[in-house]
Image (cartoon, rainbow over all chains, first blue to last red; front, side, top):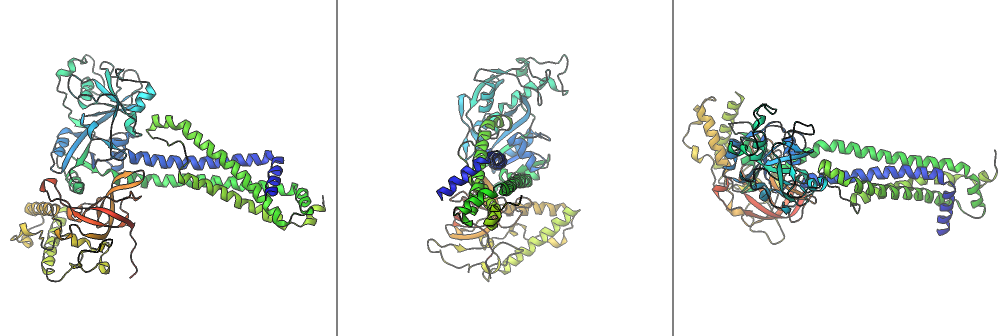
Length: 424
Length: 206
């Protein structure tokens, strides 16, 4: 067996150019399969981690998935806002334990800005009911004195190099252009949150009153000429928020969730929508599942194609190796040795390819991880491969070995005389 | 228009149901209206005593409703047949009826019983390992189409081990049923279960 292995390895080394190209194909296919699996699992985990302990999310009437996407994941835009009166009525419902209103729409250098109340830092939970923790500083006070205070997520702090005391300006909408900045009312970072692995990490949190204040002179949708309100003067205005984007709701008893959901759906003053985060998430997976499966099928096909090229190369090699195999047969190797030789060759090439592929996949995830975190708020798990990844890797290796049987069986049937009596 | 027809239909149905329930007082086991998981032959005799440790008595969803509960109690003495579809009183009564259903009491006889019951999953707490908390409801689409099931037809389940499940997956749960403290302030009574087992629902061969 060992002799067979060394013969196979040395023979393969002789044809290293073609075989290494095949190994490269297999490496790319394996890398694609494993990276896709990692992305798929991590996107799901990241979304499932993002909200916990919240029984209902209430917003303007839209799709449940969309409400979930903009209120929790900060993906896409809000279709409409709801009035503060509705939010107050909801807070007074007898089954409701707490509510946290949130306002969205502004940004700071591409990071979303979330307006909320100090209760957010006590009530909001992620992962397995973990509360938010401050790595530095404190939560904003929510009072008029602390009007221009901001608390930033861990990723905002890391990627922009901010610490407490940093002065930042918010931009209207998506920002990026000069003129859309609320430059006249700068904020001070008073707290930095510990890393959560959720969209909270790339969010800038300010109070709802602060959002009102920076939009005082934007009543017409753009800064009104001659109507600018200096930062200090803003405190004299009524800064009580009139509308919010969504409300996170916690209930006293989780069994009451349908009662409150229907109460919200039938609220007469304005059309509202209440979604159960878990149900909306599953709806999201239903939508994404199709795309996911298409991608999986594609990468599976790429793996099949690369294995087919392995078979083709080894089969084509049979012709040029007729002498080599015949000599082996002449010195006493049986047909099963020839079969073993070719299968081992295929296995070696597949192993080399898939190991390189796995390494490429791990390196890609490790390298792209921070960028994906900053851009999409999704934490990619580096390090050891998951069980599903190991399974996929094993499947590729096994398929490679099985593919090696095809040229192996062909060589098995070739007679000794065929190799020794050249016709050409 | 459709709404008023629906209103009248629901009221009539409620009246019929109340009658049916009154008639069913004598024999054990109320017939289940419509298809419900685990209905039919699968149910054990309702009189079974507290099960031995480790075994779970199979129950049906209608056992979760106290036998002597009458949703029409407050609407007694009203002549439903003479109400027109467009009558605002009918709408008002439907609202009242819904309130009664929302506050439907839990069955004290089931408190502390080791039971096994099938139903559909409505996810509450999802972690990377799977669901850690969910609601079990008796029929499909319970949370999406209104009206939802009343509180005594909802079990708040805390599985011992997080399980990978999706919204509306049918499952069997086994564990000790606990009646949540009836507190009208909470807005709903209901059941809670620390489920020892959560298994995918498979219909038994008959």
